[in-house]
Length: 351
Image 1 (cartoon, rainbow, N blue to C red):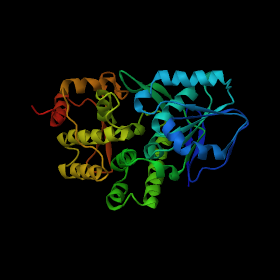
Image 2 (cartoon, rainbow, N blue to C red; image 1 turned 180 degrees about the horizontal axis):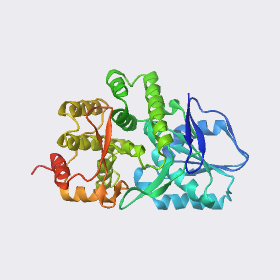
Image 3 (cartoon, one colour; image 1 turned 180 degrees about the vertical axis):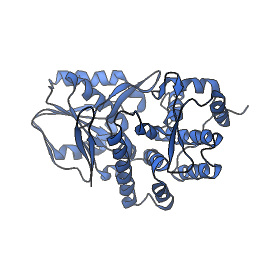
């Protein structure tokens, strides 16, 4: 299956997202595969078996969200300079969202921009992170605050990579797909309720539907000035959860799941979502082994962290919420602080 990305502005960019076994890839210049030791142990040989190039450099970076920082990117850049890569060279991101984000960001900077290809190996990166050109790293102030919109030349999604994925990582990916269903497609949400994701065909359906939904959004709004912001449902809260736990306690998709539950509490207070539908979303997250609870030590501190998020603008926080029912969405700004605090208090540590 091929899903096209076609961006018209500011310049025409087109590439394909291929959902199938990895094809044979030939390059006439140097190639670097950026990965980590865990992914390399499972999948590097498979990637190397389909890649032909005059020179292939393997760059391994430490495994984990805590290493998604500018120091790791500088280390990748050093290795590219030492290997004398030029502007015709190509980077290949073999791994999950962390690898994809860092590789894309590195590609955007190296000699002012070289080609890169996504080979996502986790469900989260296959349904979401590898598609759309968001790249970047974290710092002490928050998640992905240093980065660029930089589109890959191609995305190759091989569902067979998921055979070695730990169950917790798989569930984290399901969270991102559920996010899209809640925001855009009630039928997709119902599919999750009625499907067994232990079935490989069902998983391929989830990937295909998620990628199609995201491609449609990215084609309309590459740089998140409008509808693409809706894909941040669960992220405004979830990024704070990740930051407060130093990116070590929760996988990204797990934090997004918690963030969706928090966003739903705010939507209930605003009369945008019924308690019944919020419970339905929560139940689906629990069914897929995702966390839905979090204890906030300081509600005020949690609230202040919103202003470090990329989605805040001119002192206003944008909250992405369901709008009346599952499958619809709204971007709400200028929500009174006392209402947001009231929602957060539902998660406050009980003394």
